[in-house]
Image 1 (cartoon, rainbow, N blue to C red):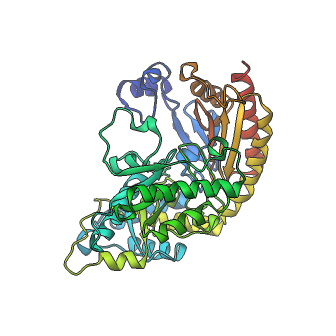
Image 2: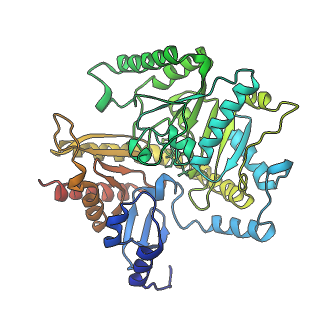
Length: 451
Ligand code: PMP
């Protein structure tokens, strides 16, 4: 265990003075300051004051193998000492990037080639650009539009942001790149007008067909979607949704990009959610769980057909980042995938995920819990002001901040906002920890929503 001591007061003061936090109410943060975390073990993290929390959000849905895996630190140390960096531009490579591309092909056999990035947004930028490039080199340069969905989250770089379908992320950052179109999220709780599951899928499929008819398939490059929508509000799709979407896209010659940034590497109960839901994308983007957050890494996989088309004799592929295929990150990814496979963590995600959903569903009797949904170790408890109208709490009530404060007091870190809790613990979480976490969240709801 860590023997270092920390000056909490000074750290908080300096954080408030100099650290610009992402996705944070900056005004409120000036009063509250950060919780400063210093070490982790398994599914738990400890703050400067010695208090341990269950990390019910696995960092940001990414610490799949849990904390304290010293073998990953060792792999990083060895690679840094041997060869800290070489690019992958201009035909250069290192053994870790070659091995990782090969390993990814084994995990996603419908993709033959992989390019790496530093995270999810870069991966989606890459996926969108490859889709457009593919059509340009196919003699169809007018196929450029990207279909996305409301509640989608694909990252905050401009292209990925335009594909993101959550208005709060767009506000005051415009103008966004043009050419992005949005469909309904496959969220039964809010979007199913009382149809059967199959009819609901039919309704969503028709919405896609209508959009394609309106815009013209000859103008559309790709459809991008998270197999289970995550940051926009955890939306596991209805049965048959992905098969319906994939077959319409195929019929109209539109590429399918699966954003597996959250769902990849075990979270939904299989290594990739394309297996969970039985479909295959033309391009898959991934990040997060590939290194379990021990070091930044993301990437995309493409089909042999796309690879052949973009390997034109007279063209350079003018896309890539300085850190595409960073050797240290790739070495860590290989060791991280070893752990996921050795410990069959997708299986634990499936088993603990069932327990988590079952336990969370007990909360549906609460007068302000409107809906509980999830798949594997991704779940959401949606709170509403009124269960009949499904009206959410007004932002002025500061519900998210209250839920965050009380749940942290009770030793659980989850993502809280005005519409409830999103939960995505490390895939190593134990049965007892799931119970402990749900009990703490239930107490939090009772305390905050005793209105
Ligand atoms: N896609 C999805 C599905 C995500 O959940 C995220 C991050 N939460 C991203 C893309 C963006 O990843 P990053 O923050 O690493 O750029």
